[in-house]
Length: 99
Length: 226
Image 1 (tube, rainbow over the protein chains, first blue to last red):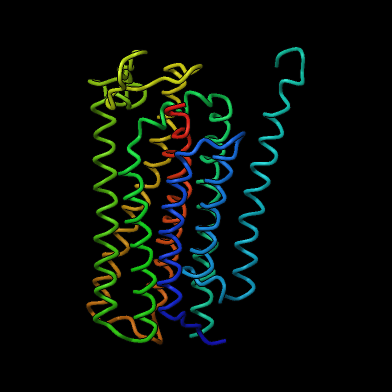
Image 2 (tube, each protein chain N blue to C red):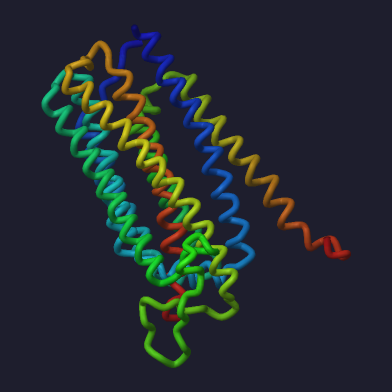
């Protein structure tokens, strides 16, 4: 497998998309959305931006399966870290004795 | 040669996984404290300079772009644009750090540096009084927020942006190394793993900021006038 050279056009497109994402997230921050939607929108935009950087600037889209596995493993373990900790904290008040 | 390049890239990715876990821990701490003190986090966040934060996001995205272009020009063997792109990336990285320093100084002036880290200016911001027009050097406390909780936000703010800035400083050092070796003509389409691998690191640091910016700067903006 020879090295894949990503065309300049794609780099420019991704760069512009990242700038648009930044503008959108700043604009959205000033609107008062109901419930937790401000946070959800901000995190969604950030995740999309991060995915674009990983796939194109970091060439993961064109990389071997092994790189994919490593990236997926990182996200999976982050998921465990958050899921287990938050399930602990969010259920502490279920104990009436106040631990 | 191909296998060596693959191995190098893979090694960098494994290192980046450890970095993801490292920053992940801090993002987790942020999540927990924000869920405990939502009003204080929103109040403290509103004191951060959104313009400087947004400009810095743009600077960092642009630097990621020039870094990607540096890798591209190395791959096709064009040395002059490759060196130019590395110089631009380095300048943009330093610009980010400069703007960050201005922000840190503002926090110092407004006595928002937590604890007694600065003995001459311990944490003790001035607070806007109700019914008066807000003074932007003062902190506006939203209903339910207390100063110790605001201080907690600033511990997390300085820990996260500080670690991020440290990564930027290390990245700037690595870029300087790349620049020297590029000028010496060490990289060509056959061999350029260092450019690619340091590029991966640089993009990773950019991604951390992509999350830090909305989480630290934008979380309470929509409550400001409500």
